[in-house]
Amino acid sequence: MDFYLKKLLEVLRALTLKDFIDIAIVTFLIYRILLLIQGSRAFQMAAGLTIIVLMYLISDMFQLLTLNWILNTFMSSIFILIIIVFQDDIRKALAQIGKPTFLKIQTEFSHGIEEVVKAVITLAEKRIGALIVFEREISLKDFLEGATVLDSRVTKELLVSIFNPKSPLHDGAVIISKGKILAAGVILPLSTNPDIAKDLGTRHRAAIGVTEITDAVAIVVSEETGYISLAVSGKITRDVTPATLRKMLSQLLGFESKAPWWVRIGYEIQKGT
Image (cartoon, rainbow, N blue to C red; front, side, top):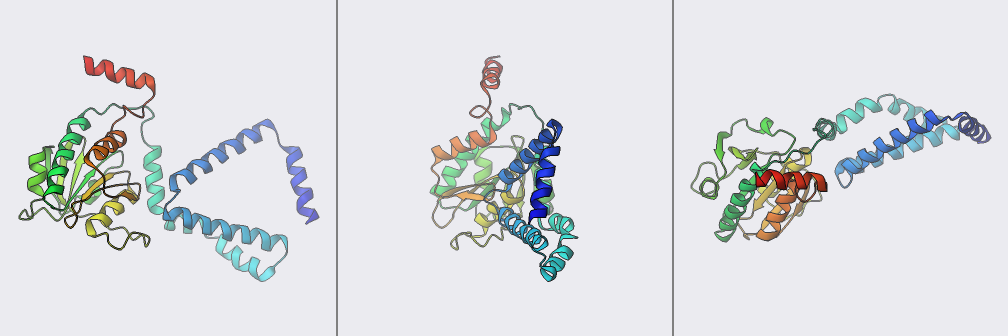
């Protein structure tokens, strides 16, 4: 124990300003990673790996030879294990890092949001099930295999007709990308999260599933209750009112409410031209 304390004191004495800057950067990166995975299954797995690492350090400190040998064998392949376990989260994080650093005003979303809200109101009133997914920064083209590509303008009438129970496309999802309906009849991955409420059906699980592995925003209309739900980042908000849905979509897909003041002023100038 004294050996480790002496080593720690030696390290602290040897630290320079450059070392403190280095530590601060690494700490910030770890903090951002924790924010990214907070509340997800990845956070629980990361906590488990942290416990294993702490056990390894304790076994080394107190010379617990058998435990130390087992954990040392495990630690030798920990980086490969991290890549395997967190592959979806790593892909999502890399996509987030690759986003442009400046805010783009995407005015094409405003029309699409209003038409989607109108369509959702009609579908909810008629108890017609629907799943509409808005693509954001991470592309959803990987899910288009077997889907019907439309590349059409977003309209209430088209959305309602797609989800009509007699339509061959009504069972799949609609993907909206860059203000247009990219495809319909899209089959999305279902969430395997065991904590999801048991009364949620396939559409809700697909909405949660696609938002777990991408930054998409998904809207679900329940054919049983007519309730509207919104999923983002693997979390679902149920029984959303149309007014709340419109506001949440504007915040998640637009930039007016969350952009810095100078960006909002620029947007207002752009709208006036």
